[in-house]
Amino acid sequence: MVEWNITDGLTDYDDAVAFMEARAAAIAAGEADELIWLVEHPPLYTAGTSAKPADLVDPDRFPVHVTKRGGQYTYHGPGQRVVYVMLDLNRRGRDIRAFVQKMEDWVIATLDAFNIKGEVREGRVGVWVERPDRPRTVTGKMAEDKIAAIGVRLRKWVSFHGLSINVEPELDHFTGIVPCGITEYGVTSLVDLGLPVTMADVDVALRRTFDEVFGELPELSTDQGRKSA
Image (cartoon, rainbow, N blue to C red; front, side):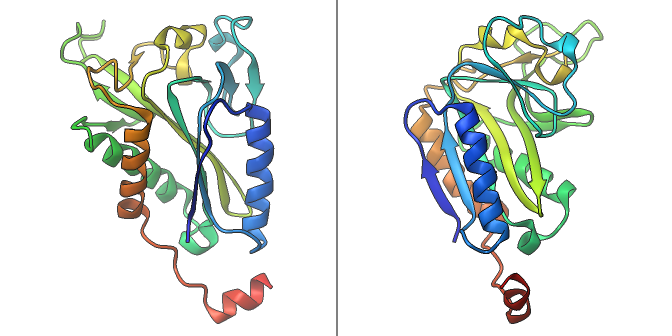
């Protein structure tokens, strides 16, 4: 079984990372169940392994946390649902590309519950929505905004970190960074798109669509049990 935990209030980022690392180690050792952890953070920026210093536009605005997850700079803050995903890829298939695609599919399925069409783009990490109500870009492309970010790390083939979906964050807070190093497109949220969606609504959709995308955890075979013992 995959355990689900929702933490009310604002969770300290460093405390969250310490917890994830300990839980991932316990999962790898066969001492804990997989976990999906839903949190909100106080306003902060995180720098992934590909972060470029020039993309931190306003370094004094919010605390900056250097993290070992993949990706560049991201923002976390109130009104954004952060989903920490601790799953055992030893049992779900050791394929990081397929795993990230499932994360994307999970976000897209969650957005679809609110009649929002989320899409992925080659060379642009995360999930995007088209904005036909906005002027086209300087290159003539359809305007698009990012609504969800994805950044994961694996240790002993157990994942941690995860994804974030913008429900109703303060979008101005994203201006202190170049989100994920992309300058041509903006950032949006479910409420910004005109939907009166609550965090609880998103949590329900995440729970329902998780099973559709990831399925049940495969049974542990006798041989696997001996190896992990």
